[in-house]
Length: 223
Image: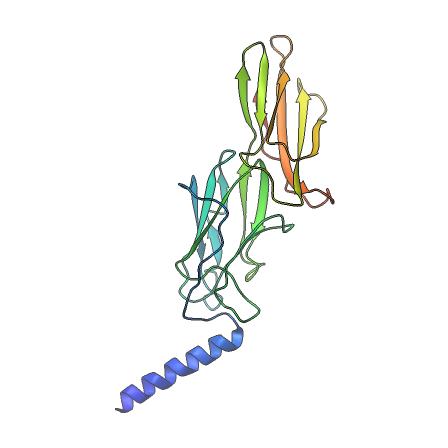
């Protein structure tokens, strides 16, 4: 009897302490997602705030193709996580930990996103200093008949308020704008004479504030 009472007291104290921190809740809720399909990359959102050195995304860097899905899974036993682009251009969260100041996708839950071209730095809003990572996505280049090529920088239209910048450079010259604040997903262009090299890159950005943008995508090349 004494053992049962002691165990109950410990559990109650633990729950009270965690609830006071605003992020320990027993019932996970359905997380956010804006895709659907088989992921090309899986990322674990690891650790919790009380175990030193355990917090982090694994792997911290992934590279996928335009249109690929990345899936994050919370491997922790108690705290929520988010995957949030550094400028807030996209955010994957949830309601585990609500009400309270710390909310996200809970233990065992997964969130996912289909990606456009860019170098997407992101972090966890619950653990912003400890959990940072990146998704790298080059544009897709395809050769067409008649010395032409298609650039694809997204498989879907951008979310409201977002658009794309696309740049090209010829024979390792200076980068020049090809599309600015476009909501198109792709375009075609002439390759020119044989031996001409084209480098292409793109990024996701706010339509009204170009300072709020992902880094440029890894360079893709076609001749």
